[in-house]
Length: 628
Image (cartoon, rainbow, N blue to C red; front, side, top):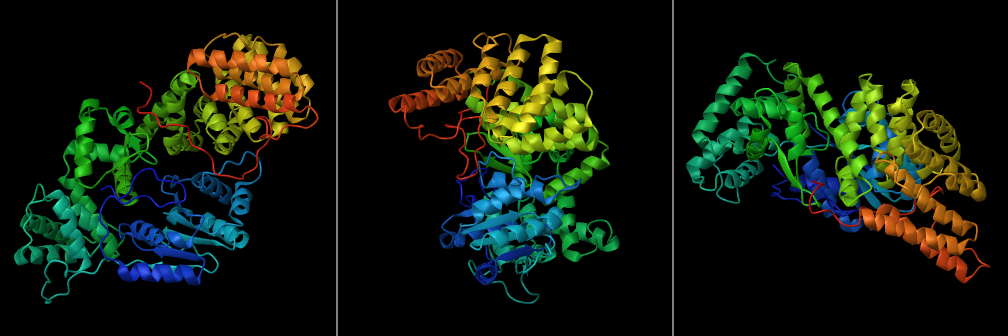
């Protein structure tokens, strides 16, 4: 069940990959509502098609919004724990791809950027965040007169001036009314037939078959997700067998109304259909379904094998079972811009899997395996950052950002602060080089406050939090964390750590306008020598910044020499990020030496806070594969 790609251009809606059926009246209503009011919330039961309708409506309105239509997917946000408006604003900021490197509140940053824009913001799956969503949309709409917001939620946001539009199920045939021929059937029947044609191309569509399909759609209350799940069974069942199986299942429901759902008929219809789909899965497919629910924002095959294999489920069987769940429309296969394939679940299907996982007593164990997998991935990325796979690791950090967040949330929710320090510390490159400084501060500040025992994990996290503070131009925090890390480095006696300490100390001085003092700190370390793989990125950061300091002090020949030496070192290692800074330093030197009377007209140096003005760039070129 893959209805849009896992990547899409900035300011555009995701591309649909399956046909859209019906909803003409709802699309007109949604379009009119967004012309009349600035906040429209599509509500309805799970599986009724709120997201799909919102995406189609947004696509139809794209020309109305010169600054684009922006999708913010909120389903990866954990459904447990306390969520505040600032965290939600950070997620919106990331979805808008804003590159603000300051310590200003995320709400303020987003509101300021939106102030002169005419765009549509699509907040998808708000039901577990209604209170912070209501607060945030109020702030944003007040600040940005050209903003319109289209939200989807199982319940209203209860925000000021909200227009609530309930999304009904698709129309089903009325009892006793003859079925129309092709192109004249009710929307629910049309959807079933379209999906059935994909699942079982040779399916008969004569009048008798259409009558059976009509009965199935009536039984399923016209719910699109339930219809798609039922149609996906046709390679294994005939239409008559499908009808009989559903009839038996709903007979059980009639005898025990509490078996599925909360008593509301449409909730029961969907839960019953999902439960029926679950029973028709092979035992190992059910187990994989349950375990896959731990992922946030999807996963690739390797992650599914690493986290979900165990017991009766072997890693070798996972690819086959993934294909089986995709064929049954229980899992979405999404092609990513990197060329990789990722798998994800719709919220309702994922919730069922999570409930089943809890019933198996495996929820805690699988969450820890998820944590361990992404901790191992972060450690490997850290170790290989200074090398030929740097761009691929940057893309990996972006693609799995939601999973790294989920692992950190798990650690902080379950009292595993030391693991949070280890993961947050290993992800320093994501916070500093990949544009997620705010997220890094969000997690590392909390973890450091809770776990004060000294040790390698805390030392690494202190340094990672310090470089995130550098990216934000936070001079006070950089200096404070620099002092703490200096103590750790001197106690360890590690040359690599001392070089990393020099980076924080020097940047603390630079942020206070003291380049000469910073130069002395940098020169006290042998940053041109590789001491160990640990903190390998730090010495290149010192090297790059030393070149900028040469320019700031008017030492142009020294700046050229430092930049050339750094480019040579980076070229030898296949490193690109620090090499780019060396090239930038050369440009500064050329501009400054050409006219010593006037400061160069260049971007802010790497130690200056850079306020938001444009959207963030992604890594230069998608890798053809992940690092081997």
